[in-house]
Length: 194
Image (cartoon, rainbow, N blue to C red; front, side, top):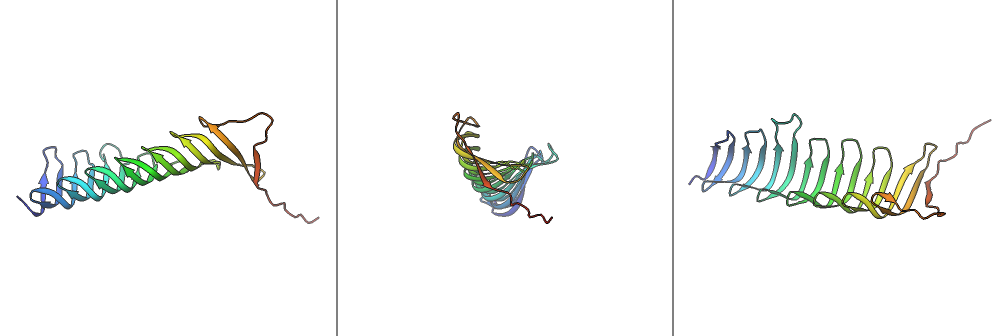
């Protein structure tokens, strides 16, 4: 049984280069697959285990998908950063390969989300900032605004207005003849010399 530094060529054309313990990939190493994907980091008994960087399918797409973070038994588990092919990044805690709990998401269009995520889907309390300058702070249910929250928007004339209340299936639930808008930050009036 081999122990120490070495290399192993796989039947599919991929390879492993790094540390072995009693014939198993264990310790620091790099595993490359035939499609160009590769993992560089910690291994334990042939599994990705510890900290590592995984870059997916480089030959399949010019812009790869990458994960930087903690692994347990070949699963993303613990703190990590996932960079997706479309430019979206997810930073937070991963459980069974999915973001779970508090997460920061930045989208390619400039919008973002910070808050709770369940099995990779926005769920719970969070803050969503849209690329058009609008924002929502409140409850989400399976990716949709649902429950108590506040929607913020900016007016061209200046100032920020808010709509506070309950949301259902992404839309505010409004009661007739009830005012829901509030001026949060008025524009300062300019003094003009005459």
